[in-house]
Length: 162
Image (cartoon, rainbow, N blue to C red; front, top):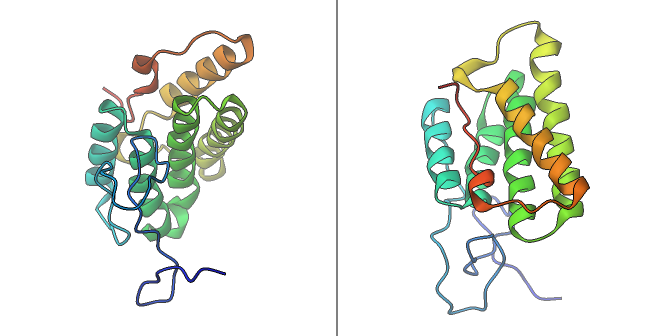
């Protein structure tokens, strides 16, 4: 077995460069800039950064930013951030031409986004457009089910209420 590089806490790290869809490239290749493993931003900065990445067509990197918020944020918000991270991974699977993976992750995202506010009988924080994101994901799921082409522009949802 090949020994993987590890951080100070012993967690495995993959230093290989990645393409814009998050797929590993050969060692020595030039890939897109990586999201730091220790990223820990306040919620509004997380959402702004993730939105910028989505607008640039970098859904995988947006996923990593949202995943950091999920893992570092308050326990009470984890379902929300996990749903957003899964949403971005669903978009990544569409970019990778993997409809099965896209369906799975977008369905999980919708389930978590629906359940977040329902469980708390409260509004979604930070101006996140939960209804808009759910509707957008359902639109993508319908397109996947019907075999309709999904353009790159449709993979740039708005995370926040305008």
